[in-house]
Structures are given as C-alpha cells and as structure tokens.
Image (tube, helix red, strand yellow):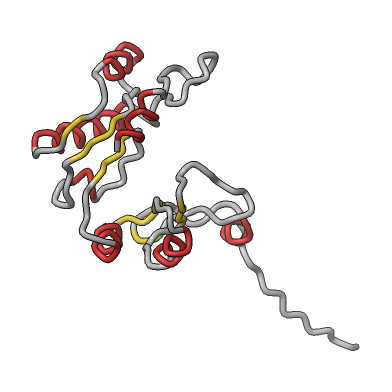
Length: 184
C-alpha cells in the first residue's frame, strides 16, 4: 500500500492540453460530483484517506470536473464505492482472506468492464483471471488497451465491443444474399 501511495503522489493533475498531466478532468462535472460523493461516503463509513490534501486543493482550483487521485484503505464490500463503476482516479484497497474471497468479491457486482489482479505468482494470476467476470482483465497492470484485442464489458458495463475482430463485427451489419439465377 505504501508503494501505491508513493506512486500516486507523483501523479500530476491538470488540463490535458499543454500541461501533460497524469490526471485530467473526468467526463463531466456531475461525474466528478459522484466520485467525490462515493469517496466521502466511504470515509464516513470508516475508510481512510492516505493521500495528502494538496491534490484535492489543486483539483478544486482547476474546476468542478477535476478529481484528485486518492488511495483509500479500510474499505469493505458493503460500501457503494466497492460495487459501482467509479471511472475516477481512486484506488480502494480492501484486505481479503485469500484468492477465493477476492474473486468472490470482485464478481459480486452488477458491473464487469475491467479488473486487474496484482501478484508475484504470474501462473496463479493467470488462473485467477479466468475466474474474474469482466470483459477485460489485466495481470500486474491496468493501463493498457490493445487495438487488436476486444474492449468492452459484461453485465451492466459498456455498450458492446470495440477494437479487434469482435469490435469490427459489432460495428457492422451482417446481410445475407440469396440469389437464384433464372434462365429464360
């Protein structure tokens, strides 16, 4: 967790044009309000913020669509932040009793866009990825999109598939032609 906080503390926040930040604005101000609301709700329920407050001050100075990167610990699965799609720069760290519990909690959601597993045991990690109910899964990363691989969620996530062969098929309309040549 300390390494996660240290890395997150390096992330700059700013306007995406010119400043080249690591974190820009979220899609809309109302989305930022939702992220901040879920974060505050988790903190009121016992989660702990591990980031210094200067990031939140900088985000507030930039406008209502900016959300500072945060790391929360002490979260649990009863908190809405752990079950909803957040789409914001907030990492929630929950202690679990083992792999089975981790997978059960990951899958106990109405959403399944993407998920990542972090482990030193790559072989075990790949095995666990097979059990995760998400359209895209990552092992020891969460920051990559490959145009040759399909992207999209399952359950209540996403709007179908983009990228790769599956995305091409999704973006086309199949048409069957039945032609019979008539000889006069």
